[in-house]
Structures are given as C-alpha cells and as structure tokens.
Amino acid sequence: MGRKKIELKTIECPKEKSIKYSKRKKGLLKKAEEMAVLCDSDIILLVFSPTSKPNLFYPHSRSF
Image 1 (cartoon, rainbow, N blue to C red):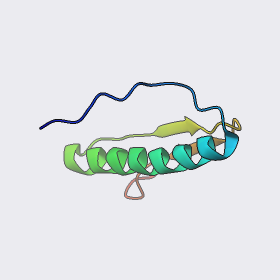
Image 2 (spheres, helix red, strand yellow):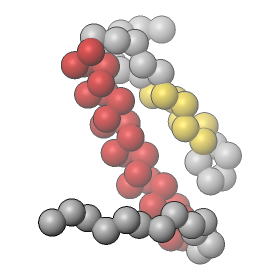
Image 3 (cartoon, rainbow, N blue to C red):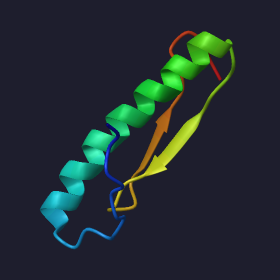
C-alpha cells in the first residue's frame, strides 16, 4: 500500500504556517547534511521563512 497524494495549497493561518515551516525546515536541513556526508560534497542551503528571515545552513565539518 502506498501513500495518498497530498494536494499542495497555500496555508492561510499564520500560526499553522509557522509550525509547518519549522518542521519542514528541520527535515530539509537533515537531508542536506546527510547528502553532504554521504556524497562528500559542499552544500549550502539558504531558506527564507514566511517572515522573509533568511536561514543559512552548511555542514559543520567544513568552513566557507
């Protein structure tokens, strides 16, 4: 059994949007870190929050 396809749509409630953003950001950062380690590559991830605040991520093992 597979998962059902989720319809993508904009989240209108600011509180709900903030919660979803923080959860998905954590998952995205984890995947970026895994990719950097497994592929021995340089990855920089720049994510803008719903309030337009930028978040910059790069693995701790390297310096830029």
